[in-house]
Length: 264
Image 1 (cartoon, helix red, strand yellow):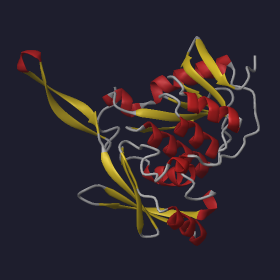
Image 2 (image 1 turned 180 degrees about the vertical axis):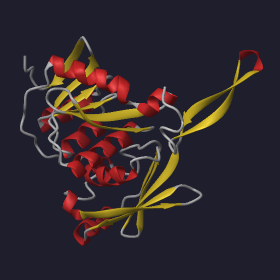
Image 3 (image 1 turned 45 degrees about the vertical axis):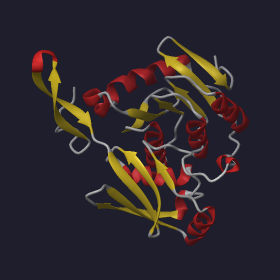
């Protein structure tokens, strides 16, 4: 188990009561209000883990179609307040003009991806069609799952976070991001991916596959999404329409392909 010093700022020590009124100290995950402010205008408030917030800002901006490319994202500065953290994000004038036209204000619990839309038609967005590729090999997925089990430092300490990780085609870990919210973890991963400009074989997430998780993966241009839990019907439909290979119920010895074709 990681110590509090290893993950300072994202866990805290709390006293809990055990049976027979025995007190113990344990580590719990920090949860913080994160406000995303674009060119001085507040747009979204997320409950998130206060780590890798620059990655969150970039990944959220792209996956929520606030910017069309990283070139429209000029930078991010963090401002700490008693109530939480503001991410002061600078984007291009064109992106800001489009954002104003959308007239959206999100208030999400743990990164709820669709909260705040003003109509049913607002949830449907046009996604880029990916070039269909073959799915990762069984060996690659098995290796990735082994990496995932040992690389989640906050989850090992608290048991309270999700993670999203990027792997190469051989299943070697490239980078991993954690957060109390699954959407936030994926946005952080996307931000890291775009910042590092790495060649990614597939994303692996510790959660179920929902529409939002599929849409965010497609927005990053990644052709394979592997999930340890179940997919939803809309996730499967969206993956099929977008050319994304969707693999769920991933275990070291088995998995299910819901969209795509087997490479073996």
